[in-house]
Amino acid sequence: MSDTKTILIAYPKEFLCYSKLQRKVQFYTSQSPEVQLVAMVDPNGYVSAYAEEQGIPFELVEDQAGAVEKATHAILFEDRECFAGLRNTLGLAAIPTRVVPLQLTLVVNKDRGDLYDVYIGRGTIWGNPYQMGQDGDRDEVIRKFAYDFGRGFLKASENFEHNLGIIRGKVIACHCKPAACHGDVLAAHLNAQDDGL
Image (tube, rainbow, N blue to C red; front, side):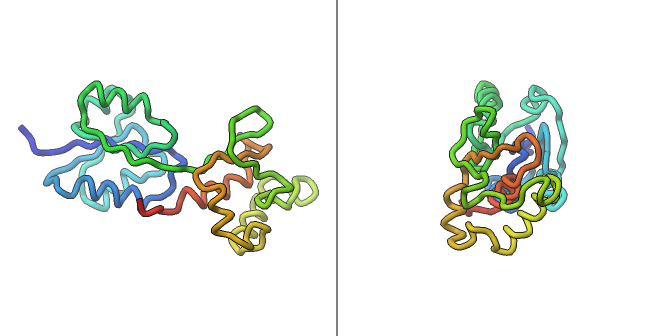
């Protein structure tokens, strides 16, 4: 019998913190002499980057059944039960699974009845002060918001860490989604931070 562990890794595309994935996979595999990685998707290229860094084999297996069949272990980076079905399948196959809980910030459309925690539209501290049409097209007003956000020019910048805490790990809503939105700038910033957990 082979001592090689084949580890299935899954993470949502909104997860933008490579250092956390790297740290967790390293921790969970450090006691294993031989490891290979599999994934069904690798939306941000993190699993392939980790495998290349470590010099270990990596295979993309597009269907869940094939990935579960190859796996001897699994590490799921999960936000809001996003991998509940996969977790259940792994459990039925008796595959040891580590779940790394995530608290991602997601952006939804307020007007479509999507459930949300915090509204970030105009009139709030996170509202985009730039209006489409008057201040440019959608891309331009988002670019201006990102510029101001990065340089501390927004209302929320006054008590920045406290104000970030209000939206960290929350579902935030504006009127734009599924189109590009200034909320994407906020979510990308928060979802790229390593919480150290």
